[in-house]
Image (tube, rainbow, N blue to C red; front, top):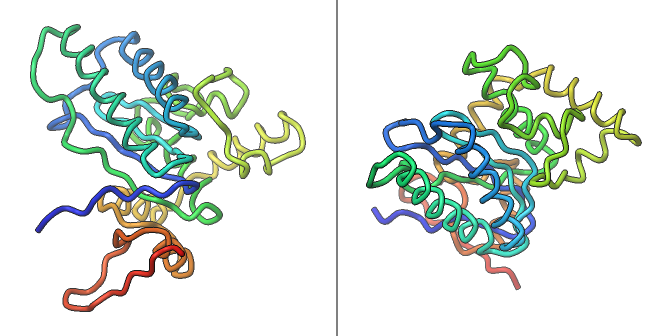
Length: 232
């Protein structure tokens, strides 16, 4: 079966996962993490993609993005991926692939899943047992949102601004949100949707989103025809 084309729709949040091939490490030194962040910053600006959240783990990374154009995310990811692989292979004296195939991605319903996705991303190092609290991990956007650092890569989503009327209020509210954690159902939904490439949201959201793309966006039972409405 031919694989589906990439699902990318302007103005919607995209959750991205990129893994190392065979779960191998994709970073070997702090300079590697910094270089990938620099590449993300450069190409997010170049291709008009807003980066809301990220975490760089030892063998994979997560991004939460909103593109302004249909091709913004794939163009950004291609540019970042190619340049980082050249850099990493040269630094390590290695050749060949670094990534586990294409990056995985999904579109998520903003009001239902965006803040949960941010917390899910922030809590990756905690779930992995690398740190006790999200704020202890240096290679994520969490520090930006709780006032520990200013991260030029980050464009806060309007839902973050709605957490409070002052920086202190927003930071405190976000700390509380992340400390409350993400339910197992939400974790599984975010992971499965991203790995499968199906849009994540309620029926009305999926129906409305389908009108904006010819690409099928959710799984249907075998043998059932599905009509696709084109955006007028």
